[in-house]
Length: 141
Image (tube, rainbow, N blue to C red; front, side, top):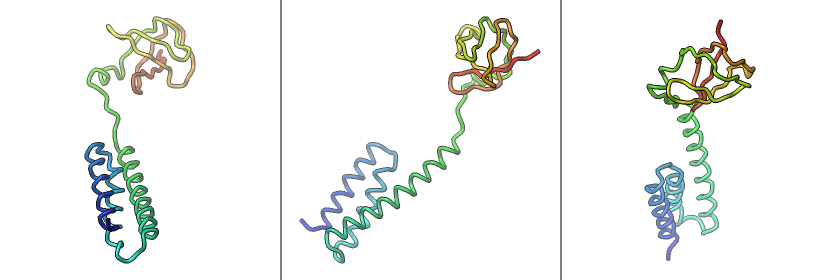
């Protein structure tokens, strides 16, 4: 089997893996293998391996930076129900030390104070944010 065919097989396998995963990781390796095909007639197998490793590293660094930027741009999704909880005023039925499970309507939520301090039972609080499934509250007068 010639070196060009070997790198085409590697590129095909990586492309099939990419189609199954969809995260662009294997696409980087597939592109590196395709470009390596172009140098098979110039370089010996060891040199081809080095070219593949360098190209894979470059493409993966580019992919990682792009993915990091995409992740930074994503806004957390807050459901309609959660959105309505923002600015909601509650009276604590149990103390937050600094977290506790509280009842909001007909459901229970984990709540914590924004500053990490404890609040006594009966304290009036306002929901100021939602972090995942945790309500962040602030004591009000």
